[in-house]
Image 1 (cartoon, rainbow, N blue to C red):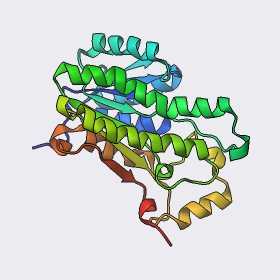
Image 2: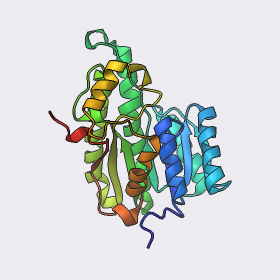
Image 3: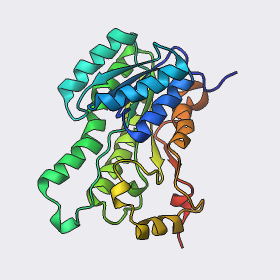
Image 4: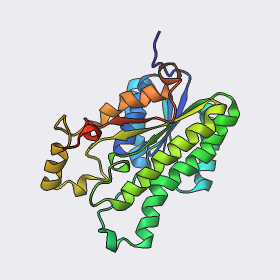
Length: 257
């Protein structure tokens, strides 16, 4: 029995045009899911779609343009994806925005912008796509992308840390709310994976600090998130898993002194 077979399933990856979101989208497609790549930058989305089609076939993925913080955009994309595939079984929320602004200098606009991308987008997607999944009667899996800073706040990323703590709370709350509809809700906590949004804060000093707090003494490779994504997406593999926060962090969360 193949516990990780996603054949016949449709996955919506919001932020699937990002470094980490793209790799997880590719992983889901590799196990048989049709993948809807949702994001604002269609050039990056097309690059992910091309990689998927090379490995999984010409109809394995499609790109959809939307601002993840816009309810109207997400409602439109929901209808477009249903017209393309006819169903939605997996929702992955990957949008992310970061900033290194010192606490006393954070403006309201910056706070609102980061909260909108990192937290509001998750709530909106779970309202719009989650409602369809719950009411369709087909069940499904929602996977939110959190951060190591959600539980142990990191220096220099105050708003980002607060937003990701909110993602954890939303994940657990909705796991309770959606369970009766057969929809599981979990989150992945990636460790340190050099990506577009965090490269600018990875100074030599900060890298040394990260390595000193990571037992495996290295950064993660984006492809190393695929296994957790496929596990949580699969009903056979994780059908009794909901409300969980899965760490893929090289031991960062287990380190103290």
